Amino acid sequence: MEDLSKYNPLLSIFNELELLDNDSLWKFFSEENLKLLAKFILKDRIPGLDYSRMEIVNKEIQNITLMNFNSQKRYVDKLVKIYRKADPTKFILLHIEFQTEANKAFAERSGLYNIRLRVNNDCTIVTIAIVHRAAANYKHMHQFDKRNNGTLVRYQGYIIDQMIEREFEKDNCVVSQVFHAIWLYEHKMEFSIQELIDKFLKILKNVYAFEFKDDQHLSLLLFVLKNVQKCLSTFENFQIFVKQLNELNLNSKVMDALESWKHRLEAKGMAKGLAKGKAESVLNVAKSLLKMGLFPLENIAEATNLSLGKLKELQASLQ
Image: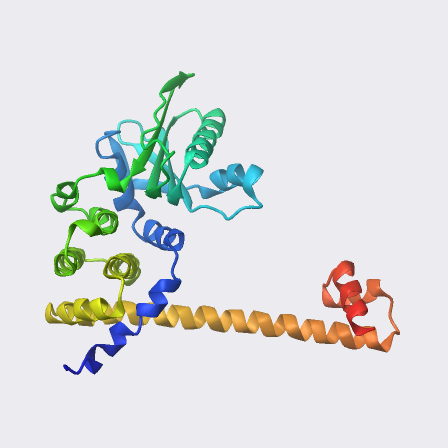
C-alpha cells in the first residue's frame, strides 16, 4: 500500500468541501471573475459593450428581491451595469440569477424581477438564469421579448446540462472551465472514474494557464474541487485524483490558494467567536442587573442594547 501522507494537506480539505454550498461558491466565483463571466454570457447576445466600464449595482436587485422574499433563503444574484462603446453614456443592465435547484417558481420569480427592473430603468435589461439542476416541471428555455419605450427585454433560462462538452473545451475562457466542471457533474454517469479524473485535471491545467490574483485562483479552485468531490463521490477516488494532480506539478499553486482559504476561514471563525463572546458577556451583565432588582427594565435595555422583550425572557428564566 502506497504511503499517501505527502498528499495529506490537500486530502484534508475533502470534508471541508462538503460544507460549501453551491450558492456560496457561485457568489465567490462571480465576484472575483465578473468581467470574464459577463463576457462569456453576453458574447453572442449584445455586441459593442465596454467591459472595462462595469459597475455592480446589486442594491437595486436586492431591494426588489426583498420585497416579497425576505422570509426565505436569499438566492445569489448579481446586477451589473455595462456601458456601450459607441455611446459612453448608454449602458445595459445584466441581471444574473444563480440557482442550484430550479423549478417553475424560480422561472416566474426571475421573470418578475426582470419586469420590475424594466419598469425602473430605461435601458436594455438582460436576465440570465444559470441553473445547476432543474426539476422536471421547469422549462429550460423561457423567453420573452417586449418593447416598452424602446427597451428590449430578454429572459432566458440557462441550464448547463443542455450544453455540449465541446462548447467548453474550444472556448479559451476561464469561465468555460467552471461550466465544464458543472457539466461533468451532470453527465458523470457517462464516464469512468479515470475519465472524470483526466477531464478535471485538464480543467485545472487550463485554469492555471491564466495569470490571476490569488482570490481568482482560489474561487476557481474551490469551484472545480467541489465538483471533483461530487463526481468522484468517495475519499478513495479523491485520493487518486490528488495523487495525479501532484504529478502535474500544480500542487504548489493549489496549496498556496488553499492556504489562503484556510487563513480566511480561521479569521472568520475568530470573528464569530469574538462576536459570540461579546453577546454572552452582554447577557451575563443583563442577568446580573436583573438579579439585583434595582433598575427598571428600560434602564437595563438602554445600558445593554437588549430589547425589552429579550430582557423579559431573561427575567422569566431567572425566576
